Length: 274
Length: 278
Image 1 (cartoon, rainbow over the protein chains, first blue to last red):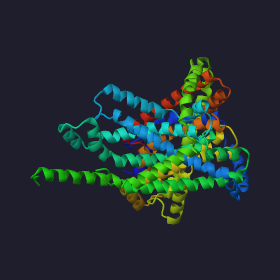
Image 2: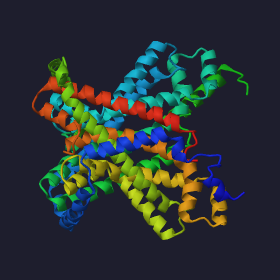
Image 3: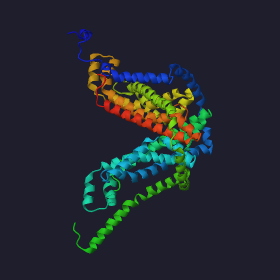
Image 4: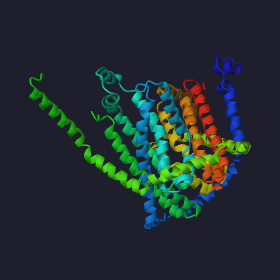
């Protein structure tokens, strides 16, 4: 039988894909259309933006490297990196002490475990923006507030990851230590820590990469650091300054990521603290 | 190895003790360096435990000012909350669409021009390295304030991640349908439609949904830099010291974020493992 004729007679055994998914596809398209109309999106706006884009690029070049002759900009960069570094460290410490309480193989009490898990989840779900806006009211503008926000966000994520790492360890050393009558602390030190420490450090380093970006953003809303300078340059239309700051920030982020990458590579697969 | 006398036992214990000391000794230098760096960083951040402790009563006072939340402002907040969700939605869809096209260019098995492929990959990784904030600030500078730059910024910042994920997904498809279609003489568009798309569409949708969750959070920040949405309400109510309204905004934001995350989680569970686009 001719394939084409079969199609004409609608004898093919399958329907077109959109006939299978008529409702979801329809809902999706309707929502998309409604949103675009509601947001007053139009291709015209986009076309109007294009010449503006080239204007902007023209104003940005050449980047004004002079901004770094002011000591303040360099200090801001140092502030951003320090915020990320100290914040990550404090957050990791906090997570390290909280995580055992969320691990099923360490804490038999379900209530404590659930409370800890819920706390960590709540912390993760609050956007850093809310933290920083409230903290700025409490302890004032500056890198210290930013650092605390970073460490709070870090606790939420690392606490969960650490707890999962502890839960997925090989149970045999733990059981054998328990059978010899070791205390809880000894069990933690000799059965759990050696197994989880590589993933612990690797996750912390990964979070450091994220926190560098968070630190940058926090500057815009009052957390101190290079974000302040960037936002300032942008709102004063000093685009050449903004480009120079962006470029240097990118280099810093790139270097920090290389460093944390090389650390991570050295640590993963290596057995520490035996 | 048996231990024959008390003297030998003490000897063994000493060796164990010295070994233990040596074990920690080699960490002394890195730990010291780390502590020094930490101390320097703390000094730069002007870490001040006194200020923090002094801030505690102030924080409690602030909470006192915030409670009870101004419930009657909720109806006014639905509009901005909806706008935030819309910006995130349109931005994610636009970003995913562009990422799919870029992913096709960056995939080895669809596209044979190595130079173009490597170029696109390099651009994608540079885009990922660029903090989203910078992308957003630049788009606000280009397109001006309002929801439109927000959509563009979210779309642009989604491309770095989604483009790479899509390209990887396309590269990992089962090559057999692809080869047989090429052997049949199908056009490139047909190969993509019938051999590539059916295999990748579940992962495509799942990744896009994940990015939507990221974007809804980012979208709240967008309001702060002037790109529309509910973040703007939060900043203004805090600047005007209307703490009870700020609390209402915070609650709305949390509800919005949770709702979006839950629905995207449910959708993802439905989509993964399902055969779409047959």
